[in-house]
Image 1 (tube, helix red, strand yellow):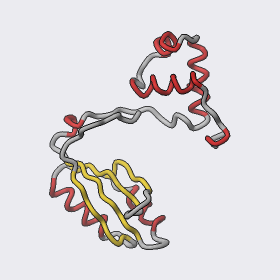
Image 2: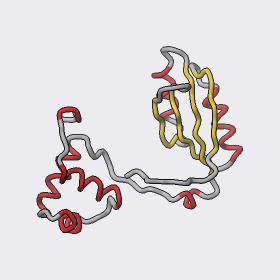
Image 3: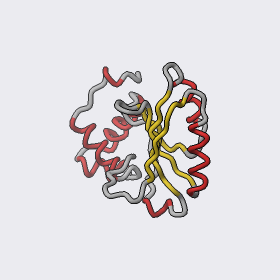
Image 4: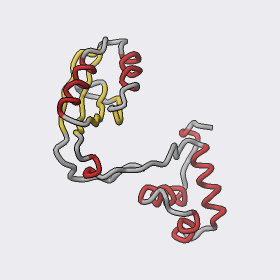
Length: 152
């Protein structure tokens, strides 16, 4: 069952998710102790949250300083009507595209890019701009991160 609309979270689920967002590597025993529940309860709830598509994965968050030598940017992308599917497919093959979101407003999509240099960013932007169906791109280079609540 991956239909999240038919699945509701209770307070314990929310506390468990919040604890994992702070440290996704926390042991089941530590989570159980923090939440005041049995380890088997933590294990079964984690399995249920994963099975129902609430938790879709665990990952590593890198500090901005870990990405030194590189360049990060956001690019707003406007596409021609009916070209979105093909543009998404092509963007999905580009390793430098870290995240791609459909958005409302001026752009159809916003992509978070990470490249090794300004020259590499320039080449990537040229490649994105040349994709069939892309009408316009607008780029903002990330200078520094002021607030980062992170993602797990």
